[in-house]
Image 1 (spheres, rainbow, N blue to C red):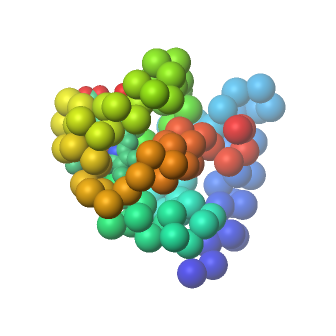
Image 2: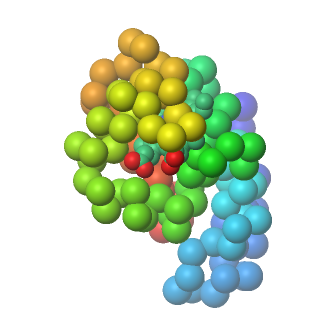
Length: 121
Ligand code: HEC
């Protein structure tokens, strides 16, 4: 389960390609999204069974984990709106993002995790 070397490599490549001021390029974000996990094991378990299928790869319209460009306009709606959208369902996302037993605090932590790239939070 040690993903650190891969992440470090991705970060290094991102730094070389993108320079200092820009975020990672899209290929780097896609690579990060494919394997990223919340640090908290309990949250990671929820993420794996609920959100990961849609938010870790570009197979739906879901904003990718770590794709800050995609998340920025969504974050600007405010956390309350994001939580409402997750609970009620939004576009292609089913109600509760398929986590029926999640509470608001857990959703908020998942959104924080998914909407930030670790190098650039
Ligand atoms: C079945 C696929 C699917 C699952 C599972 C899923 N999502 Fe999504 N999610 C989407 C799609 C598609 C969108 C974009 C919807 C749109 O903009 O029309 C989205 C958008 C979002 C948004 C942005 C809403 C907004 O107002 O812009 C948040 C926050 C979010 N998801 C959180 C989660 C969380 C947290 C989980 C797990 C508990 C989860 N999603 C699980 C498909 C999914």
